[in-house]
Image (cartoon, rainbow, N blue to C red; front, side):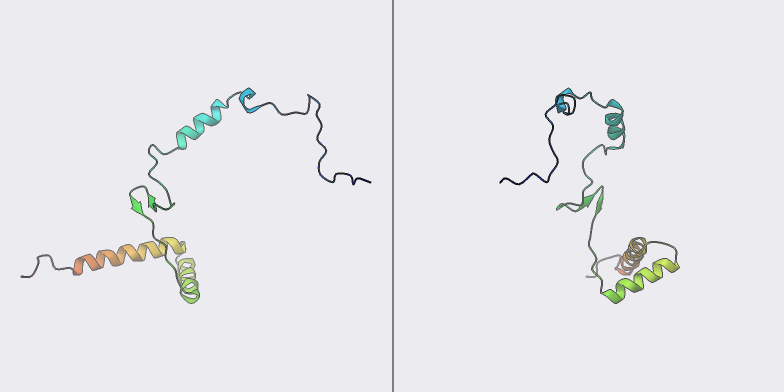
Length: 106
């Protein structure tokens, strides 16, 4: 004895079938909105190229303790851990650049 199907029953009546994709009217409002928010050039990505606009994307791995400290400090300063870490890196880069000799020593 065959078992009954437990999935959805599929009706073949014409009134329940979906129209084919080529029969649907284009949604010009949606297309207009997507075009307005789309970047002009496709330079932003975090894929294998790791580019985002004119910036480079780096991953930062922290120990569990360091991560918790970063989260606590960021919460205390009412900012995100990402923003705080980025601020620190930028400050350190500025400081390091000031420590470099201005003229090569010969």
